Length: 227
Length: 271
Image 1 (cartoon, each protein chain N blue to C red):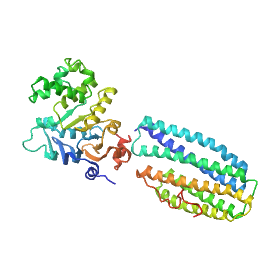
Image 2: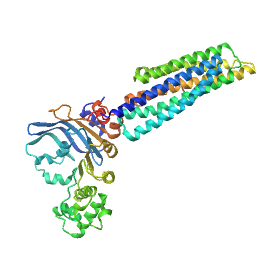
Image 3: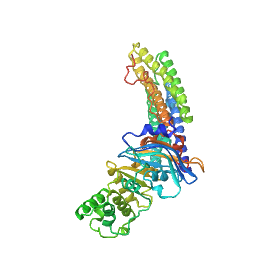
Image 4: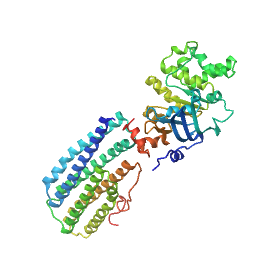
């Protein structure tokens, strides 16, 4: 029954997975560009974001058209509604990756303390793990994995706070300028992971029909990073 | 997870129950058509019955005003109460019941008489004779049926000269003229044009503050648009009686139904 419609739903979901892969790649490349001071790689991330924007916009239109013409209900409606939200998260994660890439532009010519590089690298690795888990949970509707995202996000928030503490120890003006770009990058990484956790919440709604906010005690945006 | 109709119905009805049905089974001779139907239909609300063809929803609807009594060999088990009184109890006059529980069919069926006489038919039968009083009843019924503006200057014209959609609203006015408590609508929009469908749907929304409405519809978007609560019926296997699978708030049924069979049906996976 309704073969074309079913195929379209599958195709839309597959496109979101593809977009997710692009976002993971952008996020990873942006972090590498920052740590390695690789401006060329940073520029590639910035260019990739044009492609991401085009695809997320096209997906939004496609989702809207399906809702308008096919009258989805129940799990189909929850799927499309959730995909629309997830799509927005993906687009924002891409923007954050671009922000990190722009930080590379500002910091590539300088160097800072080793500890801060290590912290950013460690944070980037953890974010990468969260993103991979998020995409796998989404692709396979694995709720157990979706519920783990929040827990996986915790150390990322801790690293950001630690980064902030290290920053406050710096004395030299030049170092401080460098480090303020880096602390923003650390914040962007932390935000990327928060979006992944939000996608996990959407996923739970998509599958179960229940709205459920994950415990956000560690990812609270209003919380002072130095606390 | 709620899967049994008994549990489902306790979740759903928010207001006062107009109809209470408990453990209803229905038979056409040897054929067991419906089994174990338990449902509370809310007063002053629109309740939609949905399900694939042959799922017993129209049969069940006709149990509610004893229309099935007219078919030889039919019988019911279980209990149906209207405002707490058993409608199959001794001393219940089916004709009086059908005045309280009016019915609209798929095909509009105006009588071969004028628009005015169609609407005045019921009140006259119930003894209203004064022209002034009849005029008032006829006008009010036509206003409530969203038809007055279109016919007020042609009241003497034959009901059958109207368009299909107007005829359907004339039939609704004819039922409303005898002040029913409940309106049963058996696919009332299947045979009429889209503008008339819109008018019928509008009048359902307007009427429900004073009349309890139950609609059988094959059009799931219509059920979603017009009803407060939705009941899904299904005959799972050929030869077995149909059952009430799920009954809940319409918004819930169309976003997060509890039963997989409901979900499969409304998303078009079968039926």
